[in-house]
Length: 276
Image (cartoon, rainbow, N blue to C red; front, top):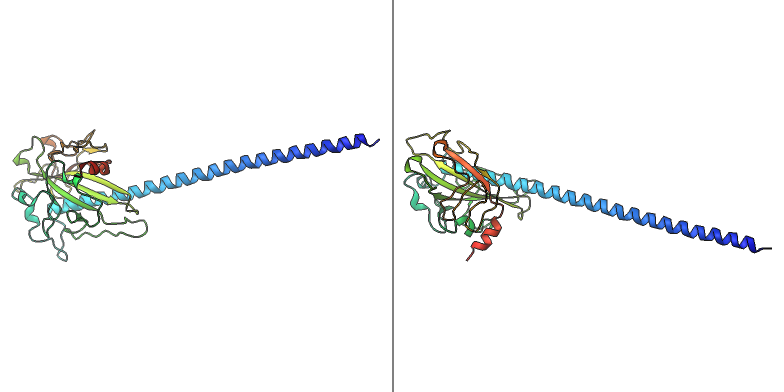
């Protein structure tokens, strides 16, 4: 007489066991989905942080390019922080002797490099904070850039200048300089290297398209990588002997000041290959 009752209780126990297993499986699936969502959010947050840091480094490198252009033009030195007396004499038709192999490291020729192969910007460690061949931001211009806290660059950007002769250039066009600058993000490991071509017109002419530092910026902007000899794969041209330039326009289009710029995305790779 008790057998049917026992069978009903057994079925109910089995059903409760199956319900528990299903609930546990659903909880496990929800946990897996939750972990994936949180993990994806952290990945997106890290990517956004890295992109912001890279933008800070690029802005710092661009500031260093402008500082170097002001250095060449000799305009930005202040009375409170004047450039060394001989600095301005190194730029222009008669100042080529100051640009030496290995780059100048003195009080008035620091960062002035002879165009060679491989170029100085590949041989030198641009990221070294104590490199005496690099010019820290504001050294010769008196410009000030806050660094080292919050959303500011971890370190001052720096630059070097090479005096070059682009293919087809004439003495009447003035003197051409290749500027290479490195900027840092909030982390010193975040680095961006930019390069520009700057034309200093002869003293007797103002040059087409403006004068002075940054008087004109051409459309020679390249974002490609370089090869082992400093030759970019797109708009800029550098033959690795110090005679190339980023985005060199035709003679009748040449402005005074900056006439092209590019980012050297693979600088660390080129530096590693160029080291003896």
